[in-house]
Length: 540
Image: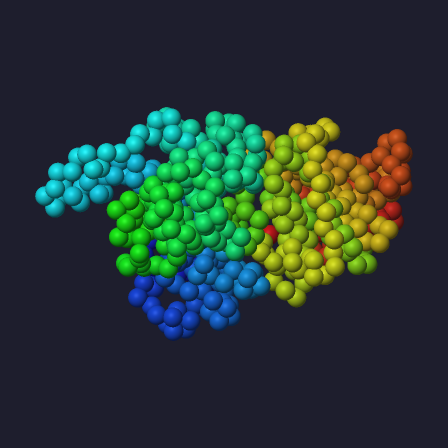
């Protein structure tokens, strides 16, 4: 009896995430009260692990996780997961990067409005019995300029909302194309200094890296307009607190709104006493919708990893954007099949190089997941290491096999094609395939330098032979005597004799069968005069 797939959920997530895991056929166990010791003792029973921020997944734990295939983090970061160790162990690490983008953008706007109109200060005064209407007069957002440092998903959502209030938006991010700025009606700053010179409000949405730490420092504040207002709903270390304090003291900065701090939790900070500073305790991702969304999205990634689907938010394998996955997804099985086929029809010698070429619409996308699928088909069952989506590229590199990937947006005869070439010394072996129809059925189009069109199925038999009468009948007779039913067949030949890669007299026969073709049956077929080569290939 097949052992069930087990997923451990170590921290509280929304019910929708738990329901998804159970509906996917997994055994779900809750370890909400487990300490590190109990987790270490139990981890080897699970195929998947779903956590939030309180659980530490380090190298020592991963060493004991013999069955573990995926760690899902219900949140944006993966700071509590040793991603490098997970990669070495062939474990996918995925998060929920889109779970809180709307929540963070809305909180940014809430702080922006609260700071512009002094809402927290006015509320506090009134509840304490003071009617201080003139003291807390604010500023309008209309026609003011918002500077956005970091123009990723959250920065773009903030800019759209700010434009709804009539603000002008200027953004700086060197990793966003100019066309995207134009699409969103946002002015692109070529440098941070250009943004500093224009902005009345500045919101920071940068990642926390050694390069970005302390981004807003004394030098940056000095280049800003007098009376600028600063927002940070991203990461505390992006701002040098002492420099912000000095800029507030000098009047260079008229106000600040902070949701994050260098160390957290933070309840005693010098800036808390400033009347023109408003603060919240890291609420940027704290809504019931975001919490539920994070759990559900992390569960989706766990399901995809354990069922062989596209993991769209993996942090240690090439991620696939949802719009790319829609196009590339149907080609993942095909690419794996082509990888297995091309290695099955070659003889001897070390593999020097794998060349993968994409033609047509798929060539416009990030095709790295397809290349990884080719490598999986090529390597699975052929190395001492267990090969998966995470470690396939590193295993290939470690074995000195060069992988090349090329893309061309046009294809001959078909809308889309995938061509895989295996190079062994001076020998080049190529297979070509595509998907056809609404259900994207995989089709084999070329093998052993002959062209045909055959829908691929689980069991395949391939024969190369001299193109003379009686060969097809011979193959059919042997398979029939062996009780093997032929479901479909295709023949490829070179009628003009102009293919330099193979003798003109040879043809190729490809059969799909209802059951596997045993090696001894293939050997019987090949014993016949004129049969040059035979292979049986079964796809999992």
